[in-house]
Image (cartoon, rainbow, N blue to C red):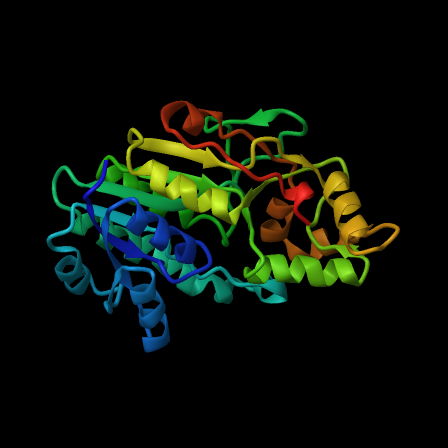
Length: 290
């Protein structure tokens, strides 16, 4: 469907910078929440309209969304590196997933379309078994707020996209992974035979656009054929001219507690359901693009 009027929260982040021009090129009228003039300039250059609104201010959000028929909420503030091990560094991200998501969903007019962001990390370790949307999840202090984000989408019969880990050259998480690999370490915790759930950022962006026409529900978004950590280690080592990479010591997982344990799980994520209900086809294999 073309010709929507869309309010896009998170349109200046790593994912949003790809989503904004895709929405504009699809013929939509897009308003993007921005916090500074540099971001606003980039939004204008992409053909969208910058607006400034505090996502934690419900009346302000309602006013900003007024006149729109679609809300796309991909706003996040996930900490990187060692800071992610501290609960207090997740506070802003938790507020976005709880308060901001609720405000954005509440502002949506009756019959409007809502697309929100979630994650695959909470799924239990499933070894080499495929993980669809029905598989059990367990939560830590770092991930429990996704329940609020998904509840906001359900409250308006919207779509929640459970993304695997982003692979993007301008993502701090990817930069950290590559920096560690140059030092000889594969920085994603877990055993070598554990499946690593990734999604290329361009495929994630195209999934957001495809979700506008998907039936209400929850969908996994991951590369078509997730591979084990050993395959990532081999591909990264080859790309960097190293003989091999080392795994993180198991003590790191133990000391990191539940948030790090969740990252160590084997998750062979299936996004087959979303491919069935939409025209989305992931085009990238992560190990082939290191």
